[in-house]
Image (tube, rainbow, N blue to C red; front, side, top):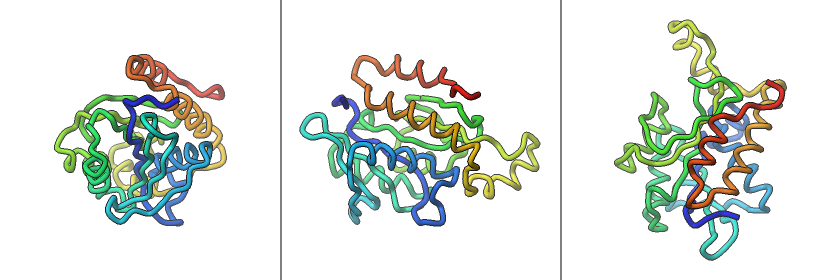
Length: 203
């Protein structure tokens, strides 16, 4: 059961078939799986610069949003949805990939910098604050050597998950969806602790 604290769940990624199942699109992948499990069909919305669907109804309604603005302009869609539906910033959660976390790790934060992530940077700029909840899903780094990491980052984040990586990722997606569906106004700290300490069974 969704609580009335969570009104807008945003997955960050890049639109288009060529980006499906890439590491940078892990936010989209979680949103799409959540929609599938709830028989929710997405609709294109020009005014929101993205695709949306609704889960449940009435005071328990939660909207899912996937911006179609590409990653570095994600904030335009998030701000448009927030304003159009008159949501408060604390009623939204952003799902995003994180190259600084190994695959299989999750970090939940209620505020913070972009950490160099262009999608988060855009959301922060458009909302005018960095105080919003985000779930950061580790996708691993292409290298521990700074120079190599910099040169390989784009290819890494736009590359597709391997079959072995998908096994781990599926555990992560399942765990995140379980937690999202149990969020209540009084247990955000409990959910944060659970996700931050989560480790897939096969790691």
